[in-house]
Image (tube, rainbow, N blue to C red; front, top):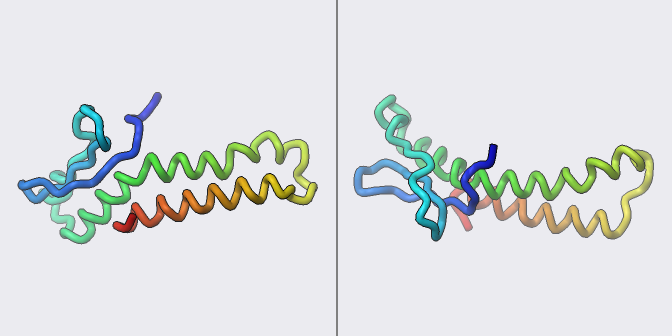
Length: 108
């Protein structure tokens, strides 16, 4: 099952609730934090939850970029030293991961 394509954004609506929606698309609302507010989740946690949810596609893509290239390679080369190419791929994926982390934390 496929999720709604990212990137997603967290926006505070006039109701005070956070809504997570795709960026630059006509797709509908993905998540609202209304349930959290009704059940006593405080505003800072509600905002942090919204940001984390909005970063989910970026986090998933970064995780895939880090681990999927190694899936087959590790099966055949678990004891081999890493190559320059593998190190460069990992460095690039880690940079993407840091950007996704910053987005989840409210930056970027």
